[in-house]
Length: 295
Image (cartoon, rainbow, N blue to C red; front, side, top):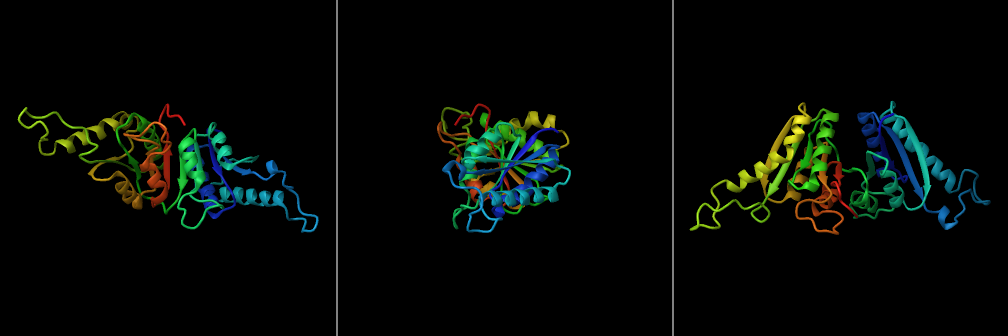
């Protein structure tokens, strides 16, 4: 067996959809699948067996057994060739999945769990893992387009390089085109050198757009050589990055972004772009932490 894909389940419909997606991701990678459920009740000394006054099939232990059996059944239906193992741990789901991410190449979660409230668009588990997980995190949400591209948000930062690498790998695995999207405004674009002393702040026509296209090309250059079979489309846009990526997600099978991008602040665990996509994207979102990023 190659690598390992981990998926968290809690009995919710969102969690079971994540299991199916995780099984397909494992099949693409030739990896195994680990289905993980975390239960806090034993730590609180709540009895796991059936109540003496209730039916023998009742109780928390039997409920967990049924939950895991259904998850494994869903995984087998989605990707029968994938080897599946089950892990039930005592503790908080966030802590358990973060620990599991240390040995995984990908963690998959649903966008909302059993404890989600109506109107809360993304669950705390998804947000926590994308900020703290030790490997890329795939949050299953929206309606992916199986024939759509992989959409990659590129900002040219060193922290975003891991996201670029992941997106190229996903495009190669899925035999899908890659749309590399970079947006800019006059506030965040690098300022070209002035033409002469009489116009110190003037930019030649198209200078900013040209600089941003160069930044995008440089961010992708090495990866295009490593993945020559991946068809890449460059898109540079003047405007807001969140709006552009959310719109692009309508036709995507996956959107890939870094956890924090250019302009991120030390101590800010998750950037505004990745946060916006977790809440509003129309397709699954993969969030990839940069090399050396710390909690």
